[in-house]
Image (cartoon, rainbow, N blue to C red; front, side, top):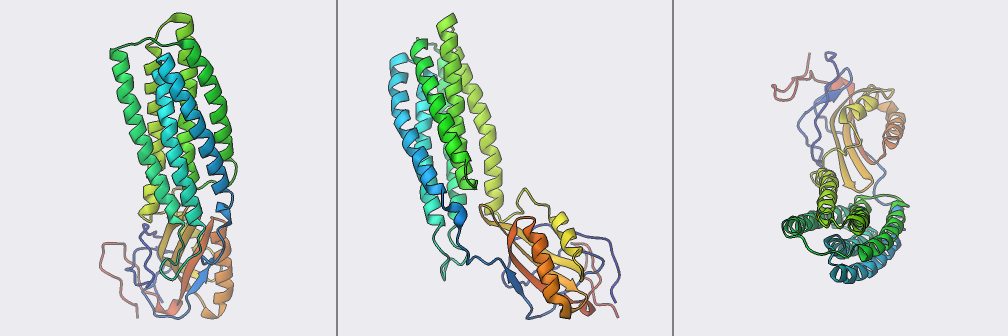
Length: 346
């Protein structure tokens, strides 16, 4: 019989389909070494249709058409009025159109079924598209910021009336496009596209305010100052999404989950003595995977333990599950990571 120890929890690691992991943590009163078993259980494998992408494509295409059309209107009005806010917003909307096109293409690719070579399917294409959209956004922010600084140093004439009218129309359009993208299931891909649209929306607000101020006061410097403010806000949002995207690409634990909490919940399932080699990672947007070794009090009760474990994980949004049972009599004394490996007790 092994010693009873407090709950230790592993740090997330990349999944190894061979299940040949080093001991890295345990949950529950017992800890175990590796045992060779043919009791692997797979739950929620990726044979299901990715229905959550079904409405993403049309929404993204409509958003693309509306955004690209109004970008041309803003560009013409920006040159005519001399407004940097309008020109910046038009340029932003052009890059947004490219981003929306990329997102729509990624949503289409993601619907393709798994293959012999890509057994997880193509869902991660959406994550890559989100990464590209974040990079595009940062490039736009840098470009507009440079123009804004130049305009502050060298002020120019701005037609406040034209700016106000076009900005008001742009605000209405961007609200509609944002509403379009916010309705339906959210993925990193649609959120990456939405980030650009929200940037456009804020840009329209900035242009509307600057146009009104210029009309009433003639103070043209407000135009680039508001542009810099919007750039700062969008940079913060971009970095937040970038953190989430990189977390997924590095197969880290999703920010919405706690490895410790999930481990404790699994260890609390009736018939489970402890949990180790726990890994949680993101396959693609809204698809979370988990693998773990469960030390069970009796292999005869494994079907019930498996069903209860799957239910616990499903409540956390974890649907792709691989669990390996191990008998309690093979338990070893657990040592913290970095210490010498535990040896079976007599």
